[in-house]
Length: 234
Image 1 (cartoon, rainbow, N blue to C red):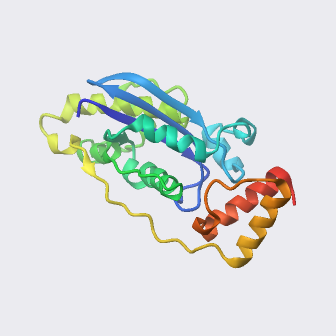
Image 2 (cartoon, rainbow, N blue to C red):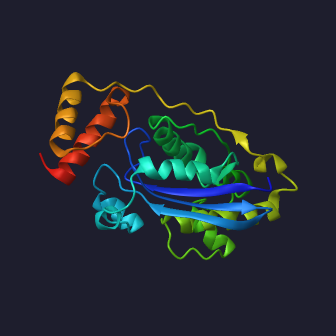
Image 3 (cartoon, one colour):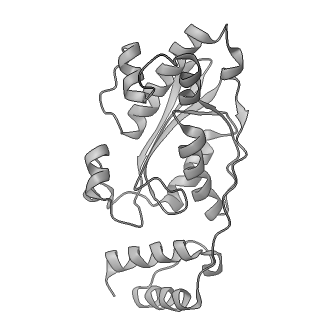
């Protein structure tokens, strides 16, 4: 794995089908060295809770003028190319979040992955914690802004280099990108009541939907309606 993308995201929650992405950070690594960065805030369709702000430092004011996921996701997919993706807990969190957002926009998101959390659990089982911050302390990695996407992504890149240096020769199987075959669960389609309400809101506020209304799920429609009411009122 000479060329790859290391990524991290911040979100409004932990549920791929319901939560919104509020920040994406990534590092393009070529021949083992960082070459390019991707870092952007994302405007969600729901308000960021005080709890999430307390963790990430990202406020509703910070994202109010950010691009929505409909604009960010195509740019991020282009940045990733067809390269393997690396992340800390990427298999159970980041990859699923990103895949849901891509598929709902009709975009393909199929990548092999390497999960540094999984590797750490295998080769550093004696440590009391394998959280990213604790591993950075263990390896003396400078993580200044924890829970900000780009800083976490870069710290994960540095963590991977330490793990490779210490364990790749004795356990090479952990560092081979693997197929991530997670499939997005089927969603409930938009209801007739939601469809009429959303269309009326769009007409009243002269809003053009980012995709055909028939492709909205109940969850999509609810979030879009909440976002319009928040930004434009009834």
